[in-house]
Each structure stands twice: as C-alpha cells, then as structure tokens.
View 1 (cartoon, rainbow, N blue to C red):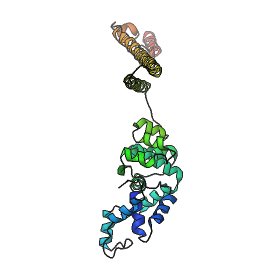
View 2 (cartoon, rainbow, N blue to C red):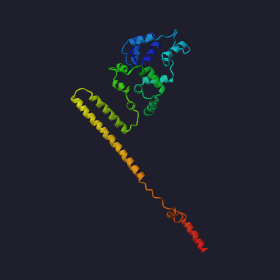
View 3 (spheres, rainbow, N blue to C red):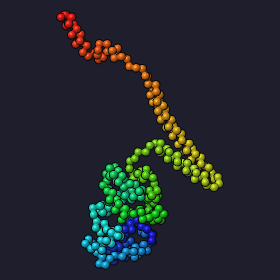
View 4 (cartoon, rainbow, N blue to C red):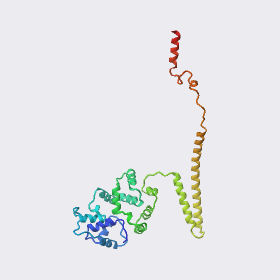
Length: 288
C-alpha cells in the first residue's frame, strides 16, 4: 500500500462516515490541504483493513468493543477529543502554525526544547502533546521512508526541496529554518566548512576524465580549504599568544618578600590614623 502522512485522519473519516465514497473522502482531505494519495486504490485498501466490531458506535464511550477498536486503530482522540486534540486541529486550521509544525516535525528536533524556544521567540502557544497529536493524525513522518516522502511530495509541493532537506538536515540548519536563535562558535563554523570542502573535493576527484569543470571545481575547493585552514590557524595562534603572555606573567611574578611591618609603620599605625591622639597623650605626660 502506498503511504500517506494523514493515514490516521483518513481512517477517522472512513469510520465516522461509512457511507462516503472514495471521492467524498478525497474531497475532505483536499479541503484540508493534503496532497492526494499517489494511487486512488489507497482508500479501498484502507477500508478493507478496517473491521469494526458488531454494533460499532464510536460516539458511545460506554460501548467497550467500540472504544477498544478505536484505540487499536489509533484514532481514539478523533472521536473522543480532549483539549490537546482541539489544539492539534487549531494548528491544522492555521496556515502559519501548520507550516511551522510541519517544518518542526520533519526536522526531528527534540519537541520539548523546540516547543519552548518557539513559544518564547515567536510568541506562540504550542504544547508538546498537541504537536504529537498533530504529527500522528496529520503529518506522520514515521509512516513514510525518505524515498516515500520523495515520491509523495515530488512535483506536487512548492516546498519540495525544503521538506526533503529538513528530513536530513543537521540540528543547526533545522533551527535556522525554524528561525530559532542559536549560538555557533566561529571555529565550529570554519571546521564544518573545511569538512564540506574536503568531502566535496573527494567527490569531484572521483569523476572520470579531466573536463574543465572538474579542474575548476578542484581549484575552487582547494582554495576554500586553504582559506579555512588559514583562518583556523590564525585563530589558534592568537589564542596561543594570549596564553603564552599569561604564562609568562605567572612565571615572572616577583618573589620578593614583603617588607617588615615596622618599616612600613614606624609609628605603629600604617594609615597614620590615631597618631595625633598618641602625640597628645605624650605631651600631657610631659607637662604632668
């Protein structure tokens, strides 16, 4: 069966509206902004896999066979929505929140961390549970492999390259696309650039022959590698120089013993406070 990120949402539609035709189901998912399944047989195959119990009543929480079936098919929250499920629906209905949630889920960032940063920096009210439910019913990245995502999105989505990139993007790039603040050290950036240049150089070198494009690419990548190396070396040398000066200061610190306190305070008090009082006492003794 071909895959769809809103499979559990589609299951819900089929169970909630058993009289709907495939075209009816297709219209609903289109109205909610989902891409069609690659093959229309998807709906028929999904229906065949669903076997509700006798006297199935998904609205009756006291009908145990029905509730057990909803849980086994992982659509329980759709029929018995809680506050978090309503929040998931609200994300789906808001184009900006939905786009952000889709980006976040594709990036596979830690939801707790990402939720906190998004709410702080973009003044939103995402919760981890609402995003988990949004993922499960509307944007289930776990149901499709990387290749299946490619087939599902290719030629039908204006954000195809962005979405496919996010599926394999490192954490820093994902956070950049989500417009989340992050601190990256200059040396780390240069080291990453150096690695990218090196691996691309290896890849270019494997191409057969010596076409002019290959020679130019090798030249550009080699120069970039050299520039990165120079920048990293300059940074390292600057740090070494600072440490060297500090070490020299520590080693050359004079070891002269402090002068005797009597030399510093010949009158018994280095700050000279109280000296006048002592002089008055001596003068009084003399006259007495």
